[in-house]
Image (cartoon, rainbow, N blue to C red; front, side, top):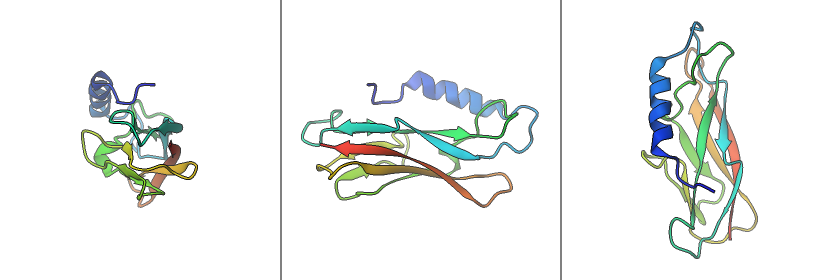
Length: 132
C-alpha cells in the first residue's frame, strides 16, 4: 500500500482547485472523506513502516466542476489516542500519522475543516488506525 501521497497527484489537485467551480456559485464543503478508511502500522519499526498517510477529500454540492479546497481552508487532523499516535497538521505532510506505541485496538483519525461559503459549520470524516 502506498503510504505517501504522490507529488503528481498533489500538483494535479492544485491545478483543479485553482480552476474553481463550474456554474455553481456556492461550492462549499458538504462533508469530507478520509482515505484509507482503515490502516495498520508497526510502532516498533523505523519510518515509513510506523507511518500511514491519511488524505482528506471534499464532498461538494452537485454542479461543482472541481472539488473545494480542503487543505487551504484550515483542515485539521486529530487522533483519539494522542499518547500512542501523532498526526501532522502542517504541509507538506498533512495527515501523516506516526505510531509511537501499540494501541489497544483501532483508534480514530479525524479530519475536520470549515464548510466555507456562507456556512459557519465544520465538516469532518474519520478513519481507523491500528498500531501494532
